[in-house]
Length: 230
Image (cartoon, rainbow, N blue to C red; front, side, top):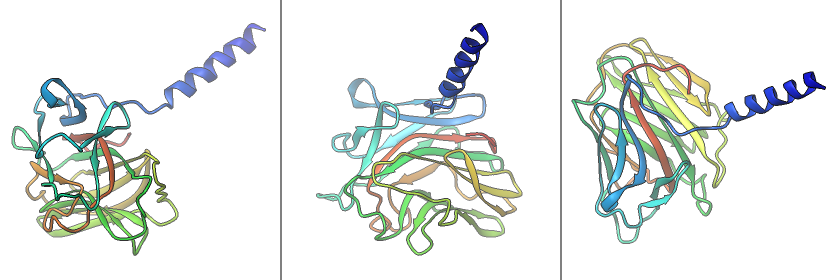
């Protein structure tokens, strides 16, 4: 009887360990945006360097997140809203050895397969969903040029209202893309990163009226380490 109880308790502990948890900063975290509204409507950030969130007002941006609050994006917005930007303090990410990860979900009412949309981008980096390939793509502008890796249609499942965890890493020689903790794409790459301290959320950074995302983003973390577990 005792043996059965012990096995039962062990199974319960394993089940709890598998439950997703909000991100926590460590020594490799450059900035972590929980997007939880604090006093005065300011969003909370964590980590030694941390950063800021820039938007017009917090009205119409805050929604229920994966954990606590999240940033809501509507497509198209009426009236048009300025793009949401996050700025990393302390010069941003290191030149090599980085990881970026976050949670997102497409809105319940959004027709997903309609156009490409950007989740996060700047002049030298992007997370994009491609309707042609039915895949999520991670791209970097390196000193040797643009490099990208993309998930296949078979391992990319987006459903309205379903939370997805996406992560990418670059270690100076290779890009990796992860979905819900599984590595789904790898591509070789070499060289230093392009500008890496200001990022646009929910649209294409080089054309803010295109690639609009409709959904919620939460728990955005920037790390100066090519993490292997998420």
